[in-house]
Length: 228
Image (cartoon, rainbow, N blue to C red; front, side, top):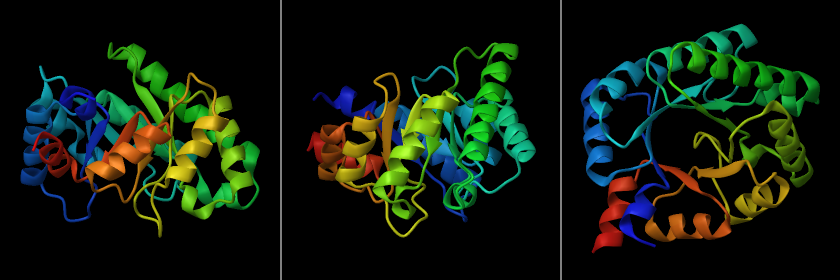
């Protein structure tokens, strides 16, 4: 793998409660330097990231209903539409985890599909082209059977990616989960691994397991290790 290929698997992520504007500015400088796939920031910072990355080969990604997915449908739709309008090229939306764990599977599917439709329409209406939607299923709370069901729900909702984790749960991405998601999903849907990915070895394991994106706050250290 070349350095450019590695960089384009990385979503350079900053989702800490104490994140400030200078932190986001640094994140964007680093992303531009290493040509990462995207920066992943809170919705509040989408306009700033968009302004800093215009002309760069780095996408702006934001999170919706993060980290529990328990907001109302209207809140999720409005947040997703606003993120796209403000410059997001990608959105990572958390499925309604409490509803899913309660067995409200149809509700989870319909809610996620509504968010996907809203993103697609806003992207068309604002001339942004295709905006990628990644569904976060938070694998650490799910049994194997529920992970498989979550994959089917995400397929039916029309997402582009299924993402393992928010990074806020008790456990992040595992090789086994990435392999499971890749095996369960239609080939048109990609897998993103996130949570606890801190080293080049971690990234290589996730890519070998079937992930095409990894979310990490350690992107710079990973690239320096690769280039050393």
